[in-house]
Image (tube, rainbow, N blue to C red; front, side, top):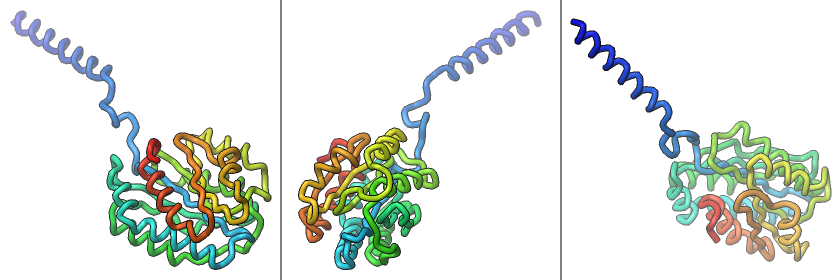
Length: 238
């Protein structure tokens, strides 16, 4: 009996030691921080005075058709979770910003095609105003708090103008980037031929950030397609 009690005592001690040892082991890769989506993407769409109705329509058609391409859908499918989340705002001056697409999860071709149709038929909902890139960045950054948890957070800004309304843009950019958010730019050079240089210096920032120029609105569709593929795939793609 004494031997049996000693054996049970030893077995209990060994079991306790094994449990304690397991608790000290690191979690497997990917378990420490899980995410709902690979990417949370804010599309910030310029509706300022410089964007006429035709140019706005070109933007929306380009965005919508890009999500309906095999290139974008393949990029989404290559991610670890094979899904991203997208929201969109229209913006102009520091008093005019409006969410026109709530957070939407894209997890396959059907979702991407549906989103593309929605974007293509989204109407302009803001009065025209100045160009407050700074306020657009601040409002865009605030949207991530209500979105799905994401491995990467990106603001995609398309515009043909410089910041001329609201606070200076560079300090706002720095504050947004400090939150772990990447800001990328698509600059339309029809009014400011060096707008891409301005964006590189004052607007874009964060891990893997980049700026893609388009010579005019007619070149927008090809540029936004390249930009979306690069954003969805992640840093390191050119």
